[in-house]
Image (cartoon, rainbow, N blue to C red; front, side, top):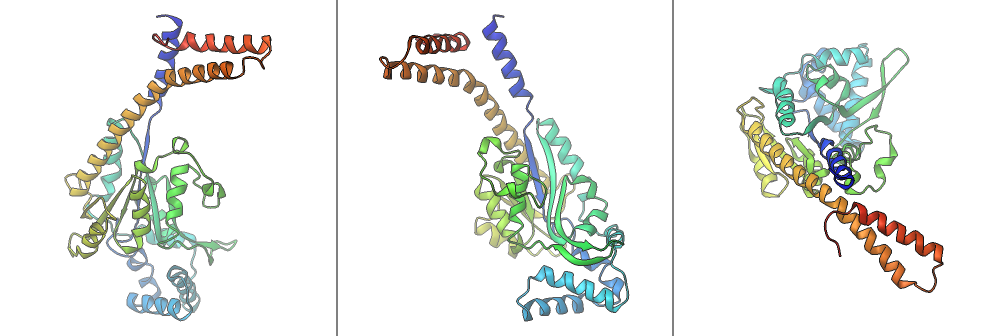
Length: 340
């Protein structure tokens, strides 16, 4: 093997060693879990009816032109003070342990990770939810997520919820898609607003999947799908109400729709494996194109230098000409094949 072959062998090996990434982003309520997370144990623990709570919360939002998520977060604090029940971070996490999950969710992440690994893909999972972050952190699936983006409270020194620190609604959910793609994962990192070329993205948009259940997920579904990614709408397999997913599919918001059954032989498992297969195939093509680009770029540089030499023959010193010739020869030595 000559020096030129050794050089490209090393370059090509480095390119092939770069493992491509993909991300699955999930809503939580009614996507991974059959109901709003607050409904299971948190609201009943105050001794109030869930319909009463949501009615009060929605009225507060309407009467005060208030964001719905800020309204329910405010109402939780109000009820906790009225009932003399401390809202501590640990309490939220304890309630999270009781969240019900759809069939197959507990084993879904490992199964998808294993399948992606076989296809040469590094798979990451993210939550983007309007629900409460601390409750999700207490759930039995929390450890599967690289990041949980959800509403959260500001806590006092003794850990009691005092004020909403982050309220995530259907429109600002989209900012976290940009965070994930660009690799700026902290909520406060303003670099997420900076322009970034496609080749510099940590996870290309076309390698992102968004899974949600309702109209509140439309901005994320639309964003991901418009950038070449995939969106999946799910519906409760027991209630079997498909009107939302039919409408979203007809509107071009969804790539697929399926029951929220995440077991091994389910429709969504089949769709996700097909998506992983397609991403793997596209990434293989990208890898080969990167390999082909190396000598082609060297040839382009050589031609550019020659064009400069021809364009300014009388304005270049002997030293500048020697330097350009030396650079041209160096490039020629690493470009395979006959390029005359």
